[in-house]
Amino acid sequence: MKSPTVSIMINAARKAARGLLRDFGEIENLQVSSKGPGDFVSNADKKAERVIITELLASRPDYGILAEESGVEHGKKDAEYRFVIDPLDGTNNFLHGFPYWAVSIGLEKNGELEAGVIIVPVLDEIYFAEKGKGAFLNDKRIRVSSRKHLSEAFVGCGSASSFRRPTNLPFNIQHVLNKLGSSVASVRCMNAAAVDLVFTAAGRYDAMVDTGLKKWDMAAGIVILKEAGGQITEILGRDDYYETGNILASNYHLHDKLIGLLSPPKE
Image 1 (cartoon, rainbow, N blue to C red):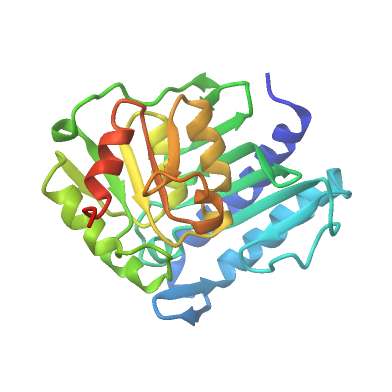
Image 2: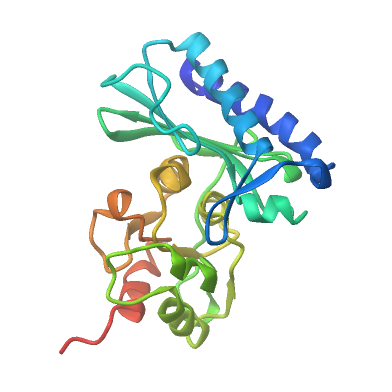
């Protein structure tokens, strides 16, 4: 049973997804600008964000907002509840006609993650979860995989271009790719963390790893992953992943093995 707030989040994400699907069919007409090396924003992102914020605040005017394009410009400041919005996770994929992108809305209560909604529009998939209530895909319960051996693991990972994002790690994403590539069954670098997280939650991936993410990239996916029975930490095993943006998510069988694989040797 969805709470009223999660239903509002789903409806807002659906409305944005419908517009994004229309734009996805007319990519050549989009206005695109650069926010930095390899980091682009289109009028599709901005329009989707406006739609989401308008829908959410119409029903929850006392909530705060943290959004990728507008930051904390909208919503109530210092609110108990705050929506964390990525209107289009996987913008580069979207702009190249690659159908691996999503709409993501998380919900915090006093800084703690409480709920998440992620829609993968091209697949017509709606993932949602609330703390303590399980994770769902199109209203069916989902669980992480049960694989136990790294040699059998199918892993999603940030691509080599992710090295542009600053991190506090003693290594970059290339180290992660090298380690994974020599130890797991297969690695996929699709560059949409929200999709990687829900695919891990649904057992399609056995794990996902990424670095230098922002809160809006992962807020919703963290809740969904945890409620699907998954484990998530910072890549070296710490609990500060939501602040650092360096995340390792997997089932419980593989998690410690992956931390051991990715950690640099002790001196």
